[in-house]
Length: 262
Ligand SMILES: Nc1ncnc2c1ncn2[C@@H]1O[C@H](COP(=O)(O)OP(=O)(O)OP(=O)(O)O)[C@@H](O)[C@H]1O
Image (tube, rainbow, N blue to C red; front, side):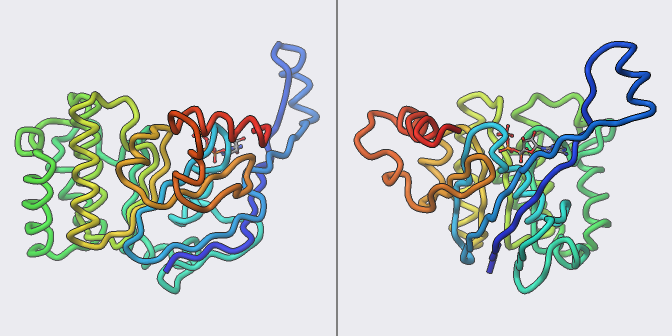
């Protein structure tokens, strides 16, 4: 249901040294540098799978998620999700996906969370009956009842993250992209978020693609791991393929990254 074939993406970045002279020089001549974020990336994911997409900083994980969600267009290669090309059929595609970027918000900062949810209902054109059904279910599963009247800016990180996850699921998407959903959360909030994702997958067969640096997230949530480094897929298997004889997954990963010089 998700196939990515030979996808590459290069960013063109303008570079200049610090200082007044360089700023003036850059007005007349710009120097560019090319960052090869993704290099011939291919994989496929079946409906209902929970996949961990892991790799060191700058490996290309967020770029992949952006391509899968239709925000970014690759330079070459193909991507089909439920028969659609994400960046070409964006309006139809977004109805099928939910996206949570742990470091960004999709909630309006100054209005109560409930109002953000109402706006998302209108944006996604969710009919009132399914919206109310989803809202009730998500409110009880993620324990949101006390939070809905609060503006997003007044929520703690963990509270906001629970609201972000609910916001991404109000339209019942079949696929959920989670980019570092437990970053900065305390132990209780992490467990709540993990428990929720497991339940969602079990009850709705939602496909989940999770990028995280938290190996416990990966251990608890996923049975398949795709490892990317310097924009290339290095391994597509299970955590035990990575772990081998190491005491912890972190140690095994660090050794793996060192062996690939990434
Ligand atoms: N908009 C952009 N413009 C220029 N370069 C970019 C842009 N976005 C990402 N990059 C570069 O592309 C490479 C891959 O970045 P990406 O954000 O996909 O990595 P990541 O695996 O998600 O990293 P992290 O774990 O640190 O979030 C990095 O070298 C990054 O600096």
